Amino acid sequence: MTFIRSLYLHKGFFIYMASASACFLLSYWIPILYAVAWIITIAISVLFLSDLVLLYRFKHPIKVRRLLPDKFSNSDENPVPITITNFYPFKTSIAVIDELPVQFQKRDFNYETHLKAGEVHDFSYNVRPVERGEYTFGFLNLYASSALRIVKRKFKFQNAQMVAVYPSFIQMQKYDFLAMSNNLTQFGLKKIRRIGNTSEFEQIKDYVQGDDFRTVNWKATAKRGELMVNQYQDEKSQPIYSIIDTGRVMKMPFNGLKLLDYAINSTLAFSNVALKKHDKVGMFTFSKTVDSFLPATQKLTYLNTILERLYNINTQFTDSDFSLLYAQLKRKVTHRSLLMLYTNFEHISALKRQLPYLQAIAKKHLLVVVIFENTELDALIAQDAESLQAIYHKTIAEKFSYEKRLMVKELQKHGIQSILTAPEKLSVNTINKYLEIKARGLL
Image (tube, rainbow, N blue to C red):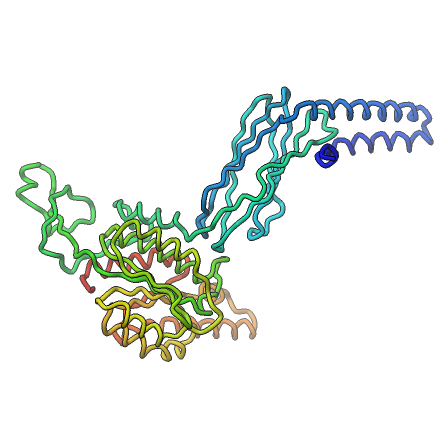
């Protein structure tokens, strides 16, 4: 039974049989082709048996291994390496079909190659998940055929391999690296001019592009013959919270990714940078109820706790209760903190309904409200309107876009910091805002 299930006919077999059938058909008018047709049929039979012997004489002639990581990074390209080893003593044609998780909705994966006797071949393909959770890979199917191209032998490997998709730790690592480099501007991160700094001296270091000339240590410069600057410590151990709205407004998708997932990825990257700056980081999620709360802590290992907590966050289908948010913050966050609130308002009226609670929070804490631009509207506004209906749609889109900018003005008028950002630029803009606040000593 196993033999029958693994046996497939190669497309070459059908080509040969079509040739034999054509000869049989034409022999009605050309009798000599009748003998040719039988010769071809007998030859196909011999080749069929020969190909069976070649492919089935070895018990384990092919070895394939799919090397999956413990976890995937959400919204990023994740490589899936595959290694094939050919133990056949002849050149073999290989076709690999991987059964990808149902979340990818991809049913046309096919990789073909040719392997020499004893050759080991490595290749990889990328997958981009857009939802957190468990992804299960099915069988790794391989079809092997010889140079005769009559039959194919099917092999099945590694069924039901599960990989958990976590918030974007690749994005987190990227900004972690950038925070330590001097090339921040080419990735969108800005150098913020300091309004002032603490008087606590840390060290004398070599001057690098972007350092303040006012901190040049002329005595050390004269002694070393190179430009040297004094470095001062920033104020550290300040409590910083990422507050994520998990209500229905965060279900809106952009490029296949929900606003909630953009906020989660940004929270992870932002928290990592804040910890590297020696601040305390915590997390708060809410909708109709407080779903999760992590008090601000300075330990670097705390990032794993945040990652695990972010993995299980989901959006709700209800409107979020900002009065509850205010009450819980008043009870649980007793020290003045930087609060990065990830939410979204599509209408100015929706913002004004929640504004009293945001003002109350901002009296005790430094509140930064993150609002998302609707990039789909931007694309509609940029199009030329060639009909009355297109003019109507463009006008409405411009009105919604204007209201987003009006929200920022409204928040500024009441002394509340804000970020208006495209979803894909959220992490960069959030980190920029954090660095700006640190540099200006606003907290």
